[in-house]
Length: 195
Image 1 (cartoon, one colour):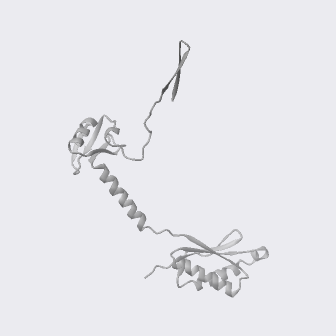
Image 2 (cartoon, helix red, strand yellow; image 1 turned 180 degrees about the vertical axis):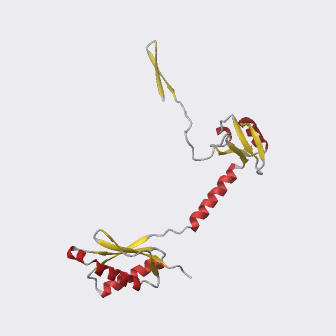
Image 3 (cartoon, one colour; image 1 turned 90 degrees about the horizontal axis):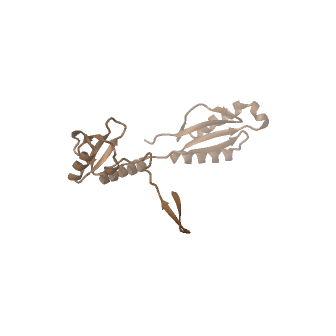
């Protein structure tokens, strides 16, 4: 916005002018009057090549057919434009994206933490929770925390993890062998495919 001050006979006038600029990049496709190229390669609504022509001529052809001129390949030399019903194109694109979102399954990773001196009932409760997560289709990260001098016996943590994996073997499988991550040992269980 530009401000101009004019002083004519002790009366101060402020004139406001606003400059509009076009966006540098647009995520949507350019259509109709937004296409400012001199020459474009035109593809008809039935997929036939209409050849290279000026954008004004291509626009006239699109208007005669009661359709839109859409720039589909701006990086090409000359840019490629297609004559199509743009509203119908956007509707079908949105419909396809919605269908793709509906069909996708989000897999979360749940964590179950154990300690070396876990009791039998606590172990069974953790196993039941892990089975519930695996039935839901999620992955389960099983980790054993080592405190103090327990770090000197990582083989005890490994046997505990293998005991846990055996208890969950009906519903999940181990992705990789258990490995140390700082002061804890962890393994990831994936749900078995339902037959």
